[in-house]
Image 1: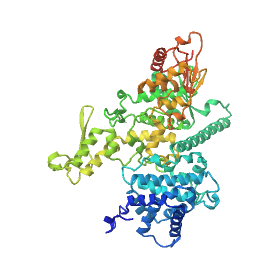
Image 2 (image 1 turned 90 degrees about the horizontal axis):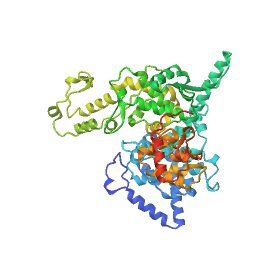
Image 3 (image 1 turned 180 degrees about the vertical axis):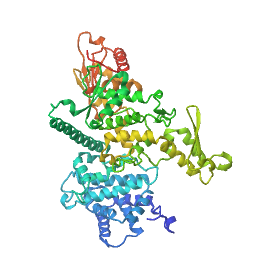
Image 4 (image 1 turned 30 degrees about the vertical axis):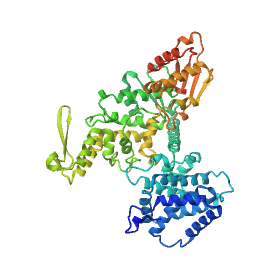
Length: 612
C-alpha cells in the first residue's frame, strides 16, 4: 500500500502509504459478503497474535496505521479484535511511538478524524454498553480503556506536532465521560501512592470536556471552601466566641464611589478568606446578595480597571484586546487585584467580560501550579512567538514578519541593531535585547534571533513585574492541581464564558410564570429580542441575569424565567429583573411597539439598584 514514489530511502516524516488506495480498498471490503469480511478480520487477529515479542519494524508501524483505518472496527461486534490492536499500538516502545506520531501527522484530515472518532466510540461503548451481550464482562477486559486512551493520546500528540493542528482541541473531548464519577477519577489521580498503577482519565485531560473539568474544579473549590469555613468555626470555638454565619463567607463591603480602593483594602485584609464563598455588599444599599450583587461588583470593577485613563492596560485599536502597560510600574497591588478578581470569578463560577489575548492564559499556566518550594521562582514566562504578538500588536507583528521574509541585505538596507526604542512619558527610551545589543547589527543570518528576543521582551520581560503580581493574585484563589488539566483556551472559556449569543437557545430553555409561550406578550418579547443588535442583546442579558456573558456550555446551561407582573397600571411600568435568579418580571404589554420601547429603556438604564 506504499506509493510508487516512496519505494526508495525512507522518509522519516512520512510513512509513504497511499491513503487513497487504502480508503478505496476498505470501501470494497465493506461491500463484500459477510463470510469474506469475517475472513479479513480473522487474518487481522492472526497477524496481531504472531510474534508478539519480536521487535517491531517500520513495516509493522505502517501496518498499524493501515489497521487503525479499518471501518469494520466501527461495529461493537469487532471490538475484541480492535482492543488487541489498540493494546499492541499502545505497548510500542517510545522510539516507535515517536515514529508513529510523525507518520500519523501526515495522514489526510478526513482519515485522521475518522480514526479519532473510531477510538472514541470504542471508549464510549465500553464505558456505557448498549447491549451487555456484545462485549465481554468488564472485569475480564480492564485493559481495554487504558489501551484505547493511550492510542488517543498518540493521535492527540500528532495533532499538536506542528503549530497548526489538524483539528481543534475540542474534537478530542469525549462527552460520555461527563457521566462517570469524575471526582473519583480526580482523587485517584491526586493520590498515586494509594492507587499505585491505577488508570485515571485525569492522566489524559485532553479527553475530558471543559464541562467535566469545570465540574472537577468546582467540586475541588467547594471542598476547599468547606475546609476554610470549618477552620474558621474551630478558631471561633477555641476562642469561646459565638459563631456567626458571616464567618462562612468572604464578605466584601465597598462604596460605589471608592470601588477600587475599597476592593483593594477588603481583599488585602481578607487574604486568608479568599477560598470562602463570596458575598458582596454595597455600602448604604439594603440589597441582600443572592448572587446579583456579586455579579454587579465584578462587572463594575472590571469596567473601571480597564478604562484607558486608569493606565494599567492598553487596548489595541485593531485587535480590541487589552495588554499590560509596561510603563505602569507602581501598581502591583492593582495588578494583583485583577488576578484575584479573575481567580474569584473562576472559583465562584462568575463569567467576566475581559478581553485578554490567548497568550495571557498561556502565561497564567506557566507554571500551572505555583512553585511553593521556591518562592523566588520566576513565573508567567511562556514560550511565545509572532502569532501571539499578532494578537497584542498586529502592526508590529506584521513588520517583524516582513523582516523575516525580506529578500535583500538586511544589515545594509535596514540598518537595525539588537536594540529597541519606545516613547515613555515623552522621552525616548532604549533597551538592548542582548548584552551590547546596540553594537550588534541585525543580519540575514541572525534576524530570527532578533525577532524572538523582541517578542520575548514585549510579551515577557518588559511586563514581568506587572504580570507576576497578576499571576500570584490569580493563583492565590485558584491554587489547585485541577489547573494542570486545563489548556490556555479552556482557562479563557472559564473566565470569559461562551462568546456566542444564541437567543433561540435561550428561548428554548425559558420557563414562564403567569404566561404561556403562545401569549401575545411573550411572542412580542421574543420578536423584539431577536431583532435587537448584538449590543442590545448583551444589555438584555445583563439586565436579566447580571452578566452579558454566556456559560461555557452555551445558553442551554442557563436557567431563565419570565414572570408576569400583573398589578394595577403595570403596563405603564418598565420591566424589572431579579438577577440573583435570572428572572425577568414582564408586564402584559399589548403591542410590539410598547414592549420594544419599555424594554429598551429598562435595559439601557440598569446599573445599580436599591430596594424600596
